[in-house]
Length: 395
Image (cartoon, rainbow, N blue to C red):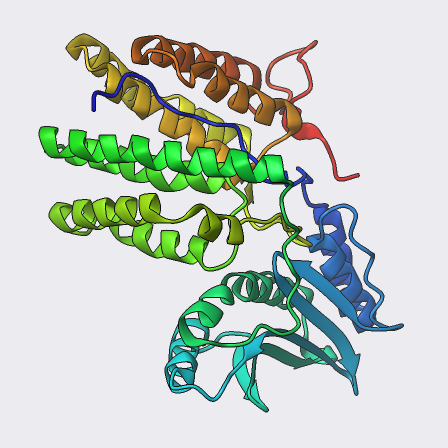
């Protein structure tokens, strides 16, 4: 099937608010700890991490539960120690119990890690335990972030592959029927498009094209759909091979083709069961900045690649090369509303257009975004410079 356009759908995921962290709050946490107010330092350190709308921690009065996706990280103070626990599930009596435990321990535990997996009465959990007097705020910030992330990511595959029963987990909120229909349509259209791209890779035998299609296949679907359950883990595992440039190209292409085949064979009911909106107490992805925009959407190497594709008349590669840059930015980073709107608008304008037109829109929009947002607001622009979109503070 000839590729005549790119399908670049808008996201159905619930947006994560752009809320730059107040670094003065982190410094205040350190000052409280060093002044002997260990509980006050803990409260400030945790508050430093939280997104807007989260309850302010007061561990002197009672425990705190942080909801991170489908995980619940519970923190409380007991006998001069801070204890943290995130339950992943309960082991059953089936034949997969031993395999589940071994896989869990191998994937989650680590030498020198501040938290570790524990098995208590068949309940598998991540746990952290430290004396208040030894719990420096920087250590606490690291362990809470990492523990919340690990608990959020390491649950559904345990239930699907090893029969663990999920306990003390936060349920995903179901999508409206119309959103489910949109998600199903996006899923099928996306993997049909990637299937055609796999044929093009085979025809050209191009490693550069394989790299771009691999990025497109994974990042776009992660951006577009609120995937939960075991499906995200499967997609992640496959992309870890076909997106790994250190792997042999033949193996990468074989795994990509297999992943596309499995995705296209997935029933609508199975897909719907893996959809749902979740909330986060802590931002799970990085905050974008002006330097990143300049690095991804600008630079001589990128301009030269675009010029080479144009000169050779390779419209598909020209459009895909630029679209993947935009997808990378919106899928893996949180932006101020104005920047996010500009990035998404560029993708929406290019979606479905003939490849040459789409490529020109993306090139023009990239230049406009760089002019408006691609430099830090450090006062170097002279008097009258407009405030940067990245200058906003946490509310």
